[in-house]
Length: 333
Ligand SMILES: *[C@@H]1O[C@H](CO)[C@@H](O)[C@H](O)[C@H]1NC(C)=O
Ligand SMILES: *[C@@H]1O[C@H](CO)[C@@H](O)[C@H](O)[C@H]1NC(C)=O
Ligand SMILES: *[C@@H]1O[C@H](CO)[C@@H](O)[C@H](O)[C@H]1NC(C)=O
Image (cartoon, rainbow, N blue to C red):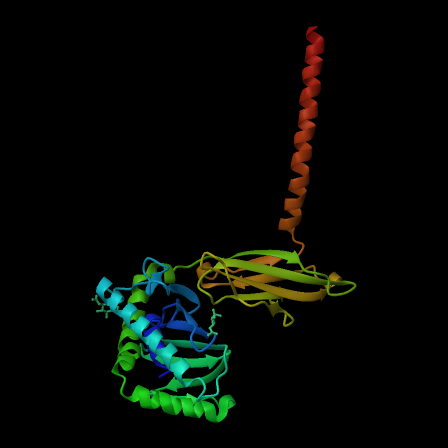
């Protein structure tokens, strides 16, 4: 019973990746959060994702899918989308009703928050694998593997009971299978195809250096910022010559608003050892031409010199011109 809404989600958000050399996302999934305040009040939020790129949201007032990209409808027709939206609404209502009806049986206490993820993923060789799991308060309590409900041990007997229920229900639910096994893979492939230009583009990283808060007396925190790259895989290391510095720490990959990524690599060093260190960036968009930035390096020193020298020179020139002008003025009078 709990599964039904997910089926829909799965359909919406399959996530997978086509060809072996495909560099973009590979999975389409729906994330679903239902909050139950009490026996009579509940609301759900849905969103559709290609890996970690959100391409759908859900308007729960109108019960419609919001397509966040021109291509996030894939090749689905208006009728097909409307059919999907209706299924989602029905399944969501069913889910909410089922949870409310069985909350006490499963010793769930209000307020309850249930999160779900369902979708499909393209593996190398072209096979597509489905996934579906449910969590309560952020702790997974069951997942479906090959049509079998697997309870999470953390939830003990309760999860087993829920699984038993789900399987009873699921066993005769054709819609569920259709959505996860048919609709999701089709939707995934067609979205990957429709969004190809954007999903397979190459975004070149920009890199710059800064120093972080001093880790201690006589020490420096070197920071290498890398931003604007796409797709995600990137290699950033602090180097001494050709030697990778094992102390390099990486931040999480953070999304930029324009569907590119940002990463920071830091290195804690003795101040006197900083000279000669460099930050090296490898990314598919650079086609082998790694970015290498040297700490305290000619380029930055040269830039600072230029920044100081150019205005000074202009100032001198002004003085000189003024002087000449005044002299010629004096001469003519
Ligand atoms: C249920 O929760 C909603 C939202 O918090 C609240 O407005 C409503 O009064 C509650 N109903 C009952 C019966 O407690
Ligand atoms: C699920 O099914 C597929 C094919 O039917 C099989 O290859 C795979 O090993 C199964 N996975 C598990 C965990 O049973
Ligand atoms: C939609 O795209 C899928 C996957 O690319 C393809 O298999 C299917 O034939 C397409 N359907 C239509 C109606 O074009």
